[in-house]
Length: 94
Image (tube, rainbow, N blue to C red; front, side):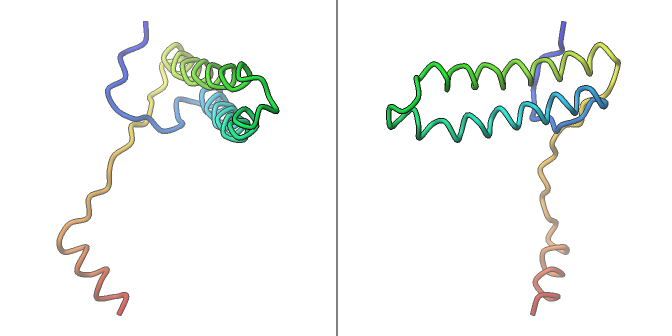
């Protein structure tokens, strides 16, 4: 059983998992491109639903593969600039 997801993860977890994450991004891109076509009636709405489910499946598969192979998933860490870094950045850009 996969550990629960409590934060965003970055594409990671070994080569196979990374490939599944890339496939997921391609499915998401296809989904975004299909949305206007569905809206205009040129494509059946089921196509958009399928692509959405496919990207969900690929995400879960990437996590499952990483888990089964004992690979670590990299969590996303929000970068919060410190006050000194902010003032240095401002000073260097002037």
